[in-house]
Image (tube, rainbow, N blue to C red; front, side, top):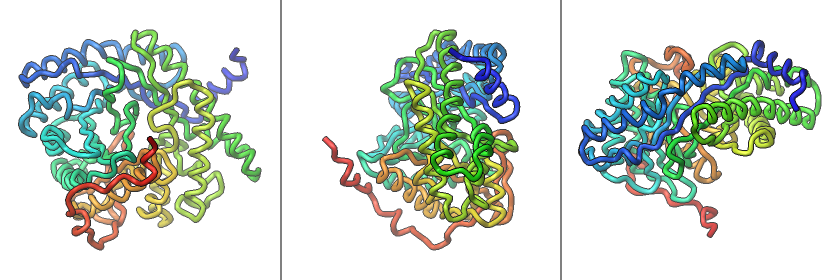
Length: 454
């Protein structure tokens, strides 16, 4: 039973501590749309999405009003388009036509993003995979709602360095294609190792091929709630600190479970998972960096930051898994720079560097996220940074990702403006020593020895 104290407590979290359901993401399989005729494929895709998702936004709004829980975004994830378009698309330009169809369908049903303009190439690339990857810069430039991802590595297969090298070039090309908007296209492109099939958060969401025809995945978020809870245990020991985070994560996840169940019932779509990630926004008081500072750091990036983040991430997971039978996605703490005011302040203060962020990604839920770098950064350097992050994910059997934004025409000391939830970011310096010879080697880095578990 839920008592009146818990109702009051949840209301307080919503009204004063930025508790929200960050997204209801409707996963839609497009495997039954596959056709060798491009026009027919586009027609099927548009009809499948608009029919399946026609009530998504209205149902989300109804739940929001009825329960008083803010639901910030309603989104769609789809089967990776490199698979769906393989029979019909002969060129990168053919894939761009699908991107336009997806964008039109997303606009029709009223969602803000649609994820799954993706390719899964951790071991090798088909011609379809390569064509899709090469189409990404143009696709992101001519659409508003498309999000793209490429999975280039896994613990089981190793790292596809041919794909890593190509992705370095694609990130640079996407920056050039959207340079009038501070290279915004790169903010909608993620390169993954060990990408999950059920992630509801953009820009990395797609619907894995093992999923049902349609599924509801929900992402909750409550950095402000955790920060407020920790203010009450200042000076206490680690046991009480950890217990507080666990209990708070449990309460936050229960809100997501409630919304997921209601959305599933009203849409007639199976419930998939709750992703209990702490996802910050540029809003004051909605910062993961501020949680870490509340734990005891003068600034994020100070010695002890990685340990504090490891503690936070683990306790969030432990509390969340008790609140839902189906926890999935990424589930933990995000550390995007542009979307977290505390991270931005730490960069300005000089405490947070790209190298320290990389160390932090060993224990967080994602990776190098929403980091603006000088526009002159070479494609090979970007590929080298991607390779480093993929290695962390591969060896540690965890999801890691890179969302770098080389902002064309800007350098260290400048600011990039992305708007909305994407926020703004200071341009961070990048190590300028080259890695061209390394990333130009062909083939893949083998899987680590502990991947052999059969």
